[in-house]
Length: 300
Image 1 (spheres, rainbow, N blue to C red):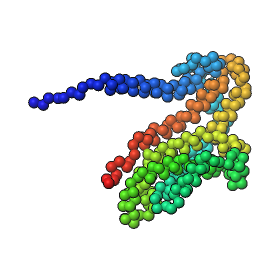
Image 2 (cartoon, helix red, strand yellow):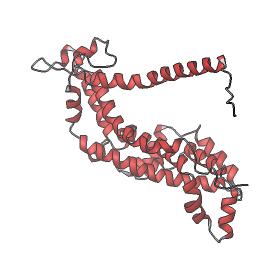
Image 3 (cartoon, rainbow, N blue to C red):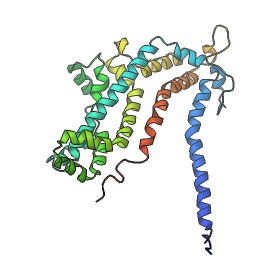
Image 4 (cartoon, rainbow, N blue to C red):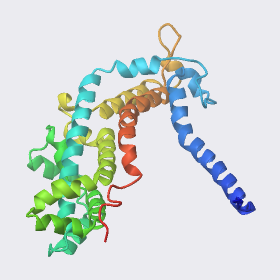
């Protein structure tokens, strides 16, 4: 007759599990609270929000801030350009950085270490705003859509992350493909890239968030081209206008004296509008953050 052996209960294990559960709950609350608080403020009346004390839900419900944001003059144009620059900028930047990373990750490439050192230097040294402005003007990037994606094609940090991941892949995969007559481009497209989906998804999300949230280049280089404005730049101008027009909650009242808008509620509504697209995209990329695709691929 088989007797089941019971593992003795360790008090330290129970204490650690309790501590871990409490820590995760606190971490979850600390992560979600700013988002929930921003949503609550965005649906609250502006004058009432100035009083403070709003935490998880609005005290005086109002959609005036969203109405103000959605009635912006260049809202659709800014949204369209923001989507285009995010898609084109992400795909082009990921392709260029992946190709550079693949070249620098090959041991047969003679100048891999020297070029990698050169890219690292660019992370700490740059020409500054004025030389960059002059360079972009001489290149004909002013008042053009190209300034949104051409200037961000190469990122030293993203390239080095991709290179490090590619260097960790087994060399047996490349050697086997070369024995079958595959060239480097075929190896990159059909072998390396499928195995790099997790890091590709991570870099793509980083680039997409940067492209979506960036408004400074629109203000500096495309300020005179209203047909090339971006959503974040229009929201920034709206917030600046509201701050100038409402020195106090009383000055922001409507003619009817009912709902009001203030900078704090407009800023919250603008934040919710801008973060919704990223929240919709993130679940499709999250699964690639957990595990790689090379486990079990090659047995040495």
